[in-house]
Image (tube, rainbow, N blue to C red; front, side):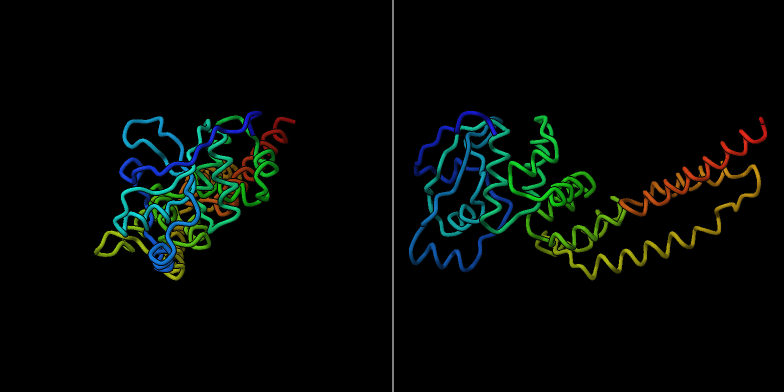
Length: 260
């Protein structure tokens, strides 16, 4: 974290000046706001880009609830932070509340861009190194529409991890198919598993097209495996790439043997 603590002040700020959160309010939060009001301040920071005056660091559900109730202002802790401090604040806040893996993944992306290593991020935020790496994979390997669905709560983290086993175009197609009449996608684990079975069967049906090599045809199969690997992701792609490397190693060995 930076050497200096961010400058903070508490204020009631107009909801119209805050970015619109991509989440819905909870019924129990609506009841709480109606009965006892807002007890915990949201956290915002001035928006550097054009548009609204403030970006939400913590409290999207509370802002959504206040908007739903027709409030004009909301109590906020305004923090004047740089991008590094904002990312660390986001991760620290998520440790003590309902987690949102998408915002965590975006925060990790910012920290990496600022020069932090995965290990440093884990040590400074309290997240395990395995979780940091999972968040990086979610941000880099999920199709943008799938990632947006995760951010809005349209799928669980477990479902998102399953979705990573599909190529990005397959992820986008599944999210589109899961989008209801109201334009909100709800991706379920069983839908992902069904798509995975269909995708694997489709890939297996293409396997007879692969030429089984003999002798000097190892290089041909290696090239074919590399092409097939592009249709997969994660461990399945790595397995095919490793197999291709082994075949190319066999080609090099045979060439060396012939040369000797």
